[in-house]
Every structure is written in structure tokens, then in C-alpha cells.
Image (cartoon, rainbow, N blue to C red; front, side):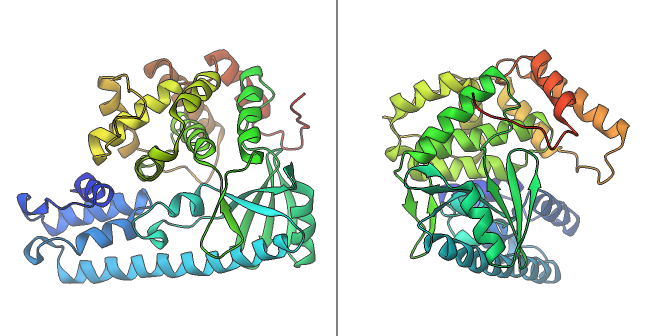
Length: 357
């Protein structure tokens, strides 16, 4: 039922009458999955489409409704603060490109159903990176600005955490990592951005978003952090943008970034489980067979990250990364030895200097 509700949300169709009503215990499991994977509000809107006799018990339904309303209210509050920050940037001639959350939320059937974490942004002024300007604007607004790794700074503005990106990926100075970072940076600075409503928030072009979503999801998947929300994000993004994508150009970029295998796998999972349909002018997808079911099973069984990052926890996560790189041959952008070395070397060294030279 959890997967079918997600599928109904992506396709916009309902076929729930064919399912037998679930028990209260089974509905509790559906809610647990929805909460763990960040899909409470999305599924709540699908529950409303169910025949009354097939819905959860009233007490559970009301609790679910309250949780969804809380998340959507939080989304609105965070969006307002994001707009305040973006407006201050616009006064300085800086364009605020939104990464992940708000950008992907624009493709959801209902935008505020996409759970809001923080504001990830990449700032542009006259075709150049405006990272420093973003930090300066944050300080003028009274926000606390602190470095958080070499990739970005954390700007604590009221109740909103803003990640101001100097780099788009954790490329760790590897040859292939630099290739991916340079390609994404070129796309982000190159234009073709779409404004979110009447705000000063902007969504990067479709080719950038495709690469960024894939690269980010791949890192999370190998680290055992990816949720079903990433698959749902990918499905609704492709559904909305597939006719705006230059598929030949994207194909070349995917090959250069070594993301083609993961692109095919994620797309096949979205098609198989969430009902995504690609139009005939899109890219041909090579089937990855059993890996499709493996990925869905692995993501559904995702382990909740331990708050205490003990040596044992870190070692286990490192071994899990190796296991997945072996199991899912071809999806990693780096060789196993390179990935392990950079993971161990840079895990705690947050103040290291990085550049793309």
C-alpha cells in the first residue's frame, strides 16, 4: 500500500479499490514508512482518495492529518524566511539558485507536501559565483555564518538553516570528482533558470537538476542514507521536465560524469514502482534487471543513522559503502580504492583547502 499510494501520487490515477482494507497494525506500518522516508504529507493527500471503508481508522487518520498539517505549516514558514534571504540577495544583484528541496518541491502535485529541511543555495551574480556576497548578506541580516566543510557555509537566519554552497559536490580533490564539479558549475552559471512564482528564488536548468539530483542521491545511496523520497523526487522531476531536456546533451554529460548507469537504474526503479512514463523522444533505458528490486529493497530497509558516530558505526558504514559498490557494479563514479581513501582521509578534516585547479 505504501508503494501504491506513492505511485498514485506520481501518476495522478487511483486504483485503490482493488486493495483489501488494511488492519490498524498494517496502517501503523505504512505511517512508520511514510515518516521515515519523509512522505507523510504526500501520502495523506492520497489517503483522501481512498474509499471510506479502505481508509485508516479515524483516530489514526486524524493523527496523520495533524502531522501533515504541521509539516506543511513548517514548509510555509521556511519558505517565507527563504524569500526574505533571497530578496536581500536580489538587492545586491545576486540570484539565489535553489538546490534540492524547494526546487524539487515545485514538481510535486502540491509543493508544500515536500518536507522542508534547509535552504541549499548556489548564488550567482553576472554569471559568476557569488558565494562571498551571500555570506556578507547573511551577516548584515544578523545571521550567524560559520564554515561547514569545504563545500559550503552554514548561515543561521532566524529559524532557517541556509547552506551557501561554494562547491556543489564533495569532490574531495579526485580527478573524476573535479570533472563532475566543473560540469555542474558550468551548467549552474550558464543560465536557463526558472523563477519560483513571484519570489527571488530560482530553479536551475533541467540538465543541471538531473545531474545534481543523481549525484546527490548516489552519494546518499552508497552511504546508506537514501530514502524513497529521492526516488519520488526523481520520478516527479522527470515527469515534469522530460520534454524540456536536451537528451543528447544530457547523455553526453552523464557519460562524462559516469552517472549513466545510476541514471538508468533510478529511472527504471521510478518506472517499475512509481509508474513513471518516458515519452518516445527520451533516452533509451538499458535494463538493470535484479538491481531494480535490490535498490528498492535496500532503500526500504534503510537504517536510521545513529546520533553517536562511534568508531564501530563509522566502520560499519564504510563497509556498507564497499558492499554496495561491489553489489551494484558500475554505478559508482569512483573506484573503490579511491572512494575509500578519500572517505577516510577527509572524514574529519573540515578545514582542508580545496580548489578545482
